[in-house]
Length: 432
Ligand code: URA
Ligand code: CA
Image (cartoon, rainbow, N blue to C red; front, side):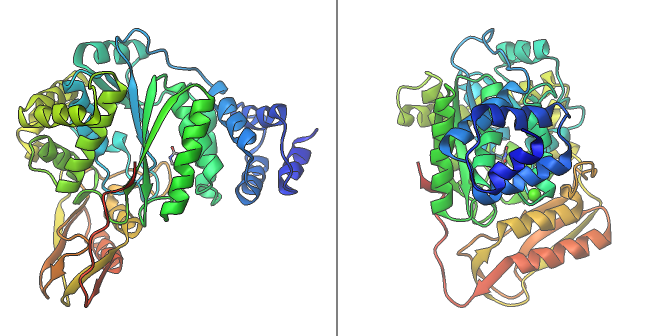
């Protein structure tokens, strides 16, 4: 069969065989199949879907496009965590030292931000000196010695996902459940952890805008993960407004440091404690979720998690003094306070639009090789349900040019909707 005939199979809504899926995925990963043909196949898959078997085969082929990380030299049960992507989601920066302080090893390969969602690697790189590329041996050694390492995914791990994700991003084929499942689960299987906790985001700042879609995605992630031998657990958490109050790289590092000092935003703190509680159970360190939560709360209030954070940053080449003195982190030159022109209740905050506003301030990339301004972004003052008087501050913006401030302000204003009646804030968890 030619590749053109393989596209026809999916275009006409038929089911591929396992060997056909292998040819598509491995052919594209190896460079044999050109982007224009893969683009056509991705759109056919987006429109007609993939069957239950096809999704498992796709994921398995993606894993086999590269190497599988061997974490067996790290003692204990290795638990990985992955969020499906959101705005002001600073969780990993807090969770990594938090679970490590409780005795569960945290060995994670992370991605960069693309479009309106932020990426852990970009946040880490805003810390002066921080290295996010380590050799496999140094990565494993650091996890054994310090309990935590977060690095860039090396190019020989799941190369199919790297190429397919980049192509999906420019062909409007990202929000497809089977393609998202293949992308996430293949990375998690190749990443070598024993168990995975997935934080499926729901709402205006997530790929899944409704609870129904998110529940379907969570079910599929679990089914395909289990079919490939992984212990997968999902939570569904809210992304109808930004999780934290900071959007931008160094600004989110500061927010993570505040959360480790027990002075961070309530929602971010609660999500980190809840996820840590579950990870500690999966890692065999806690007997129950209640016990896991208790251990995580102790690690925060005793300062143990903060000490692990400092050691982690220092071991990866970063300046650990940022923990005590956040002014050592970069900050964009210009700031502007955005104040409300009218009063009312905050009834809606479009998290995707806020992510785009941060991008315009210089905090994100529109295309993969855009350069990020590590000190740019915004600190929000309001959340859904707050009452606002005219003149109240909505946010403080940070950027390197006045034009960026203007563009960011316009976008931010468009993303916050005020109304005459009080609304209740969305729940942090939609389902566990
Ligand atoms: N996150 C991923 O890693 N892949 C997707 O396809 C979507 C979100
Ligand atoms: Ca996109």
